[in-house]
Length: 165
Image (cartoon, rainbow, N blue to C red; front, side):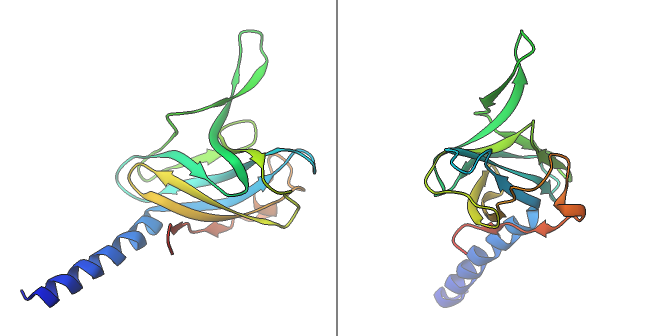
């Protein structure tokens, strides 16, 4: 194999991997919200689907919409009071399965919003997975959605895009 052929094969392989990552993990029905218009925090919710034969794990999230972005869940304390806590180990996404990030449960938390999130805005979030790597998702802000309302009556698929694309 010539040097030119080897280099072309390496470049082709580098571009093929991100496409596989995007197909391996998909995000369904993402939306973000804040509790009040002047709120300094917000959250994003979605269903993350793993189309591979290996378990994966969402280990981090990032966005320029907040000073800090964390993976959170709700947990009941000894007094029966629900508390929001950071989940440093992230969320398991089973092979050929999914994991829902939903109100009252696991979610992506935006702390110290850098701008107001108005209904209809779009937030760019980078989700980082142990195996799939970074997946960029465009998440609409939906301040009208009810807690159990999925996609205003319809599920919409949003395929994540590998970072850098």
